[in-house]
Each structure stands twice: as C-alpha cells, then as structure tokens.
Amino acid sequence: MVRAVELVRERLLRATGALEAAGVPYAVAGGNAVAAWAASVDPTAVRNTQDVDILFRRSDLDAASKALESVGFVRRHVDGSDVFLDGPQAKMRDAVHAVPACEKIWPEYLIASHDVTESEKPDQFRIVSLDALVRMKLTSFRLKDRVHVRDMLDVGLIDESWLTRFPPELAARLRQLIETPEG
Image (tube, rainbow, N blue to C red):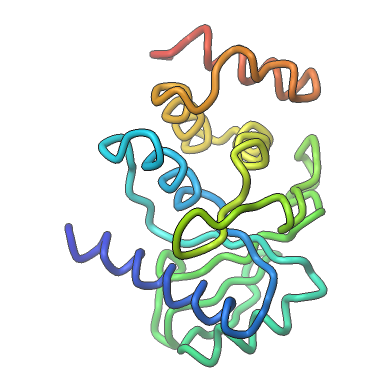
C-alpha cells in the first residue's frame, strides 16, 4: 500500500520536474491539488489518489508531450483526452492526465476550466488556486469530487462564505454539501 502512494508521488514529481525544466506552463489539479491544499492546513486530512491530473493549455500540449516523453511517459489519446502513460506497459491509472485549460472538459459541464495562470507554487510544483480547484470540483461533481469538496470543508479551507464566489448552479452544489455533511 505504501509503495502505491510513493509511485503516484514519484510520477507527479517526475512529470512536474520535466515540465518545469522545459518551461511548459502547467498546474497540478485533481486529487493531488486537493491533497496539497488539505496538507497546508492538516496533513492528516490528506487522501491518496491513483493518478496525476495536470492542467495544460492546448497550445502547450506538444511541448508538454516532449517534456514528459523525455522522462519516460508515453502519450496516448483515449476517450477524447490525452494521457501520458508511465511507460509503454502502464495502465490508465499509472498515467498523467492532461486536463485542458480554458475549455469545457466535457460538453455537459456548466463552465470551462480555468487557465494555468490561476495557480501558485507553494512547494515543489504548481497547483491550481484554491478558488479554481473548488470551481473544478463543483463543476465535475462526481462522487470523488464531492468527497474532495467535503474534505476542504472539513479542514476549513472553504466555508459558507464561498457561496457568493460561484454562479448559482455551482453555489447550489456547494450549499448541498454544506447542508448535508454526511450525505
């Protein structure tokens, strides 16, 4: 179990290190961004995640691909999105998932993702800003996204005052999570 967590962390650091060295704009998103934000308040609140999600501008995807391939990742286009498998025999969960910046990730999403500039570098790699991360999680709103928002609520990163930051549809989703903490 410990090795599985280490492998994800190693993949994250190898990928972001290659992107930094190549000067490719990026921001870590998804579960790793949630973990970084949660750890800034309470390291014991961090959840493990299976993969690495990185936000890129479409115009930087080829440069990102070159940088990631230089450290052993293999680019594939799967189900309408780009992924970078951690080697030719890797599984999808052993991948870096390219999240498109400034676009609707899926047609049914209410809003587009944000730009990579909506990020910061508190430690070893860039992560999406807290505001952008919460917006992404409320937009996706899958079970794991709802759990991530609950985690951020639980550690006090966000609260009811955040309702005014979002369009009504996303604010309603946040209100639902605030009002039903166990449901």
